[in-house]
Length: 238
Image (tube, rainbow, N blue to C red; front, top):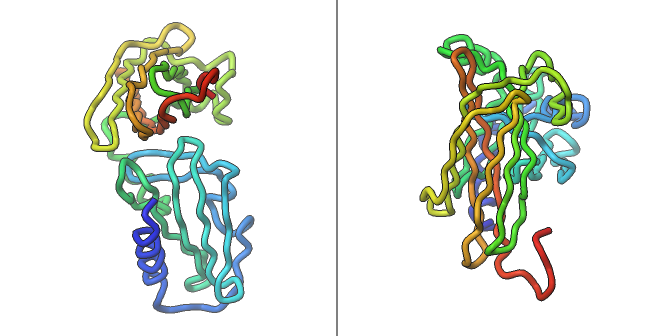
């Protein structure tokens, strides 16, 4: 990632907090919501934070910076501070070569769901090859569940399946050009599988967009696949 671009974004986010500074130390694990829930949101997608997290405190704990990478493979950066006795968090996530604002306003998210034509009450759970050598196949296995019956997002849960859900998988390269697509429907176990051939080329990052929809519900998920280039002698995909 471009260091100077990241530095510019860091100063920009700090600038958002430049007014009405209240000096009060923040307890990251108890007062920063997304560290408790494990979830990050943009206006269109949900992400899950991984154990790859770095936490730094500034001004004796009055500002807390959290950076890391989501389970789906996207790096993010957030800053939190106390404003009028409440912890306010701002941040961005790096998707497809661009910084996208993270949404920490729950009320806005709830309002958006209310005006949606279809309910977002299905969960898209994915197991996939995140890092693959060239000229190998990246496998994408996904299961669709009724969100109310799988609140822990357990990929192996043996109930609450959503069958006959229309699935669309689109993969784009670093120039945002579509290089693969597939579609179909989930089976009686809510399962759908596809695979993407990694072409012979230098190291590259591919963005995978998964859309799921039936008559009443819809959902989407994005993740990344990393091409590792040519494998070392005698090695296969990790």
